[in-house]
Image 1 (cartoon, one colour):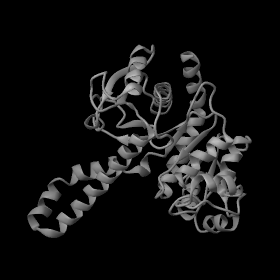
Image 2 (tube, helix red, strand yellow; image 1 turned 45 degrees about the horizontal axis):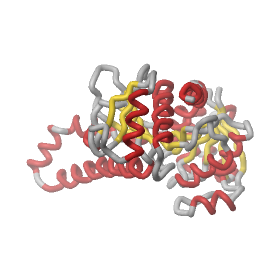
Image 3 (cartoon, one colour; image 1 turned 90 degrees about the vertical axis):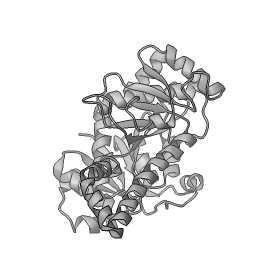
Image 4 (spheres, one colour; image 1 turned 120 degrees about the vertical axis):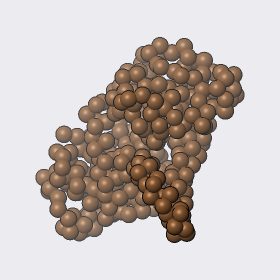
Length: 338
């Protein structure tokens, strides 16, 4: 079974929720977890919950990178931080993949420092799944959006590579035989969006083996038209945060309505099944994590507020990505493009 290095000290609820998530995995799977962080604090949490010691080992790291720290300086100077030690353990072959709920910028930079890019890849991308409507029976209720934060602006070559990386990930993890690829733009016309997007559209349209559905706009994102959405990191990050914010806003409004009037409460009762389905759909704890794609090694970035359930799912997704050889699939796609 794969060995997954887990940054125990990263995230808003670390190390307690992170270690509890690892404990859950140890009881329900054969996945081996290398838990990285303050050994005494990790052991203290483990002693309070059921776990299988045969599937858990601890790698002591005396330091940790805070959520609000400047990423570049932290990664450069904090060599004994749990995140850096976890990534280094993967780079050295002590683990097959790593996960962290910690500082996103530090996660990306730590990978860039210790992992090698797949041959031919120009830039890595942070991908994220998000909920959407489905258009046909059996379609995955989650779509993949990339990049959502590893880049700011991109050239056409990089966006085309993002499409190939997302295509490979969806094929392996979501088991979509031929993922539909969309390019996020300000209009459906192929001439929209500036030189880089126009060139990306042309190249994706001509690329064999890729089901390119053309430009998609913001209002297409909740629909099932595309399984993989390609965009620059700045745009993708704004989209992702907007989706998260709208889900939270809906929950808050429902709570306020329930407190105000009887008629509103009756209405909420009638809509309760739909509300629960929406909450379940937008529950990030079910998704596992956001893979950083483009490196020879695997890394999953979990939500900063991840609880034990979210961490457990992230470990399982990371193990699945290792078993399904996602980097090798991406490498083959890029080699074919060259």
